[in-house]
Length: 406
Ligand code: FES
Image (cartoon, rainbow, N blue to C red):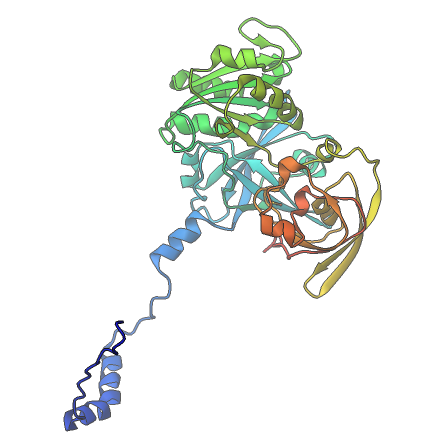
């Protein structure tokens, strides 16, 4: 403004008799409109909401419709089907779901990569494969107790371990160990089915020829599409047509095209081994992707060599307080599950933030490679219990998780 106040001209019309009559007849007109309206409920659900709920469900009620034993591989594939036969949530090949169960008095969740094609979601099915995990009581339960017809609660698809053409090269070299083949099997199916469009070279490490998981499935995919290639690498035996030893930088160079993204999925030992291999290859960070779902006590051993100790863990959930103990070699999430405390969890690797909780007192050790907390969370003493190992007595404020029978 230039110092002068702008003059605002407002024209006020006189209130007329017609305005008064309009106002007086307003209820009459409203009643007429109501009487003339159709006698049906007002629409309170909109297509956008139902589509969003269908595509991104927080839980899917599913049954184990079939169990496929993987003889010689100490593993089982579970075919999960929606209880109401509706389509399962669509996913990107490489994503995982978190399966929630009640075992004894403990509520547990475990993330498993989906091993089937996204195409099968249309008839409500997804496949997951569970491999023997010595000392792991959920894998034990699934391998020995779970049977066809049992119900499980499954999360919507989670995780970022999928091919993104804006971020990744059109050529992917996948390094898989053991059951780490599952996300790559799903990618291979998706390529075969025309859902994904990139070239996939899988270097698959197994101990022996007999212990190769999904050998027939991988063979039939490579017969159907030339965009997928599989190289088997056997560590414990030599056989014609197979590579022998470990997956090294030289082996990757032998099979990789000139430009590629490197995807890695397998047991913890494979990730440690691949750290040096990636350095030797000199690949930029953005071209290397790792899938780590689940963290074990061995990971804390890599950052802390303190002896195993037991601490007091107090958990506050709303008005409730629980007291239990936690080992320095187990995550706080595992300690809570053992005590039957219903804690939220999905990825179990520090990435999704679903288990975010506040430390009211005490200290923890978090392996740096699994510390995905926001800076603000670090400043305000928030942690992800799925990757936090106690180093003192702890008081923890935890949100309440869903029950498997929700
Ligand atoms: S369960 Fe995902 S961060 Fe803890």
